[in-house]
Image 1: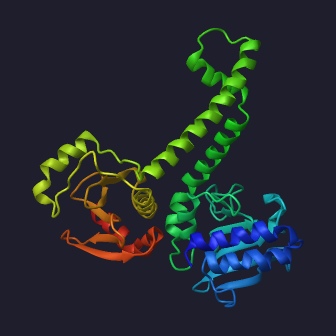
Image 2 (image 1 turned 180 degrees about the vertical axis):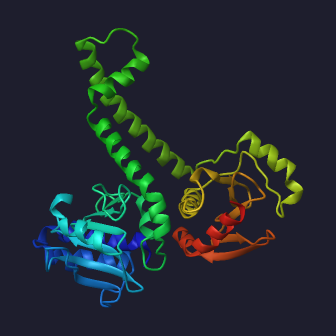
Image 3 (image 1 turned 120 degrees about the vertical axis):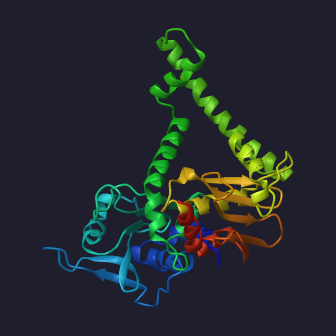
Length: 364
């Protein structure tokens, strides 16, 4: 089952039966265990993969347990602490996670009430779990940008290096998105003054501050509505998001035409799809363990969506052939000879993480 389908199925269960899950044990049985099995892909009946009631005595604390430990090769990789559905996820009430994170090999701590899932690591201090999650998933309001990162934690494509490399950016991106949402919903005085100064050059009196508070709130709502309408219009017209090439890239491309096995062509009729952008972001997430993310660049063509290192045709990482019914991922060897691999979903790119990193390392 695809990760998106599994999440959708559990989201439906949370909506329809959440109110009847009145205990922590009911939440574990109905939501948490199916999430571990269907979304993360681990065998909940195999204690070498999923160990319930995990115990690791810490100092004077004896017999305390974490609800579940996820193991790989006999090593603890993730610790999961559960609360009853609807209960607030207060990190201060997850003391076992903090203590066990310090004394085990786990690099990922998970706090969940079934509906909300918060993922933690040790960005701030080694072997000490952070107080803020780097990734949050709400089954009743799924952020599609969280799915590629969640995919890295699944059994089939477990990629701890990529998770940890991207975790710091994810942590702050999530926090800033949350702050933006709060400002759009209820603009602070500072936010109002910042935007008002862009359009009003007179002194800001109390009356004008009150006036602009309403204006900014309305403008934010209208801006969001406009963006939604643009996306809907684009989707209905079957158009994608264009990836523009820099002038330097165009000049370089013209100079290197004879060196490229398949000529790169451009034109106004080239359209970049959302699936291609999703694939590009997945490749970036994989490559970020070896190079700075800004070095991984996309160039769209009529025949394929190319992903390069340093915007250089001589440094191809891979190609996405998504402009047909069957999707293919194209990987190139040292001689620039391409081999295409059929994939069913964009997230299947994670299965080729080693080859993608190998390509990056050849040029880095």
